[in-house]
Image (cartoon, rainbow, N blue to C red; front, side):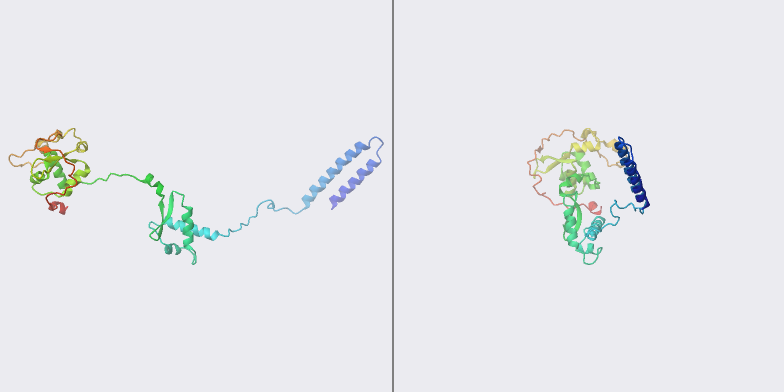
Length: 291
């Protein structure tokens, strides 16, 4: 209030000075008086502000009190359900999920909301046999598919059969069994055919027209051979310790044939080899059963 009184007194003094000014100087004095009046008013305003109680500084700031979202509890429940589904390794049912939520929670509605939220993402929430799980989106499955070559160790019977075919080709099943001295199971030849190391060459011109077998280019590539004739001979096998030193008299290893052409006693395949059942039934070898 003192500041306002001082400003009023200054204005009266200025007005009185203007009244007693000499003629011709009224405009100049009036202008100066107006300027001084404005200055006095500004000073009075500043002093009023200084006299007022300090502001908390929060008038122009948003309120520090956060209003809780009316569906905050539901959002928290959605997060809990999402965490459960990510953490479990196996699909879970509704009852399992409900065990982590307050009693009375609408678990089915929460799962439906999550399913909608993940509908267009890389993983989808799906229900399988009444249970829920996250699964890769169907249209992205081809990206994650990997082809892996499975390495399988050949059995002793398969290795012996392969060696006989390599050295004695073209050879029939009966001839393989005669050389080995034991019947072979059908699965042994099927395994070699599946690997791609053995192929059907033709049919022998004998009663029953048995199929003849021979090795393939994949066989040469795997064992690092240029041709079948590069297979080790008798002396090389002895030197490598692969043959018994006390071999029966007259034992010899035939020279493998490098020519893939059919022999005079062979005829081409007729395309029915995979459709025909074997004429004879062979039980699995006892050695195979033990293995």
